[in-house]
Length: 358
View 1 (cartoon, helix red, strand yellow):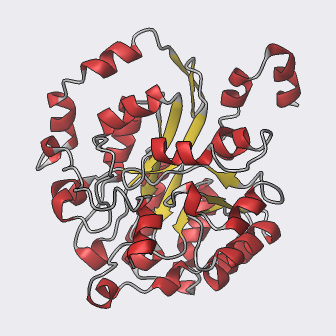
View 2 (tube, one colour):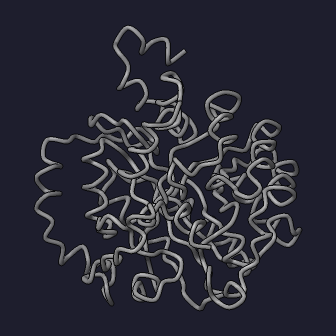
View 3 (cartoon, one colour):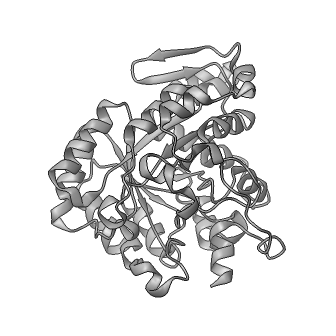
């Protein structure tokens, strides 16, 4: 089990024994308003001077050069923000980076990056409710860095549908689901109204896929059933039934990553991210397909704070990825998926910008 945990969290054998640094203490018991009011982030104020943001419709345009988009970043909100020390799903990273959203924004600015942020609403299972409003507020606070996805507890029936609609009204761009943690089968007809609503509102859906470290090592895996992270039949079924629903499968879906790759080749509306696995542990077949047949359908994702983008990017640089494919995975594929193609144009020489628009 240790080997899987090291691969999933991106730990080397030499650093797996190091004690994990504690998370940010100031988040304990504070509401978002209190966090924002109490923040004394001088680095943020210095770095955002001279950065001009304009808005075109629903799209925030930044003059800052963007080299990467991390499509998989966790933020603790609502009840989760108050019990971070007991959160079995989001352990501290091994490199000591703060998971406070203000500090995270600075981190991604230093990387010339943006990040898709979200929480997971598993209130039915755990009694802990996430806050989509807080995600939207963090996006408003750092619009040059953050893109927000909401999360809804699928077991809440009509209330879940209303919350999806509320997420769209808040300006969030997608909805995050974790079938194993939320304990549901995505292809159960009871949840079809969710997928219909997301498709109607143009919201992407991000599904955890493959195994999970949530509950790992606990008796019975804390009751979590890994089967719900299997791409076939669960994701394949809804991709076939809802062809307008844009789906991201989070993580290389080990041990079912071959099923994942088959779906990517077969279903135009399905994509994947490479989060949660240090790149040197990503299965070889995933790297081979990402470098060739599905190169336009794969996104960079770190799974921060469990794995830092720094560690992920260092190891990604060592992989035998074609020079023409690297920018696709790191930025371009996600930019197109999220409707942020201006980020690609800004990075191109002037002579190539008109070609990209066509």
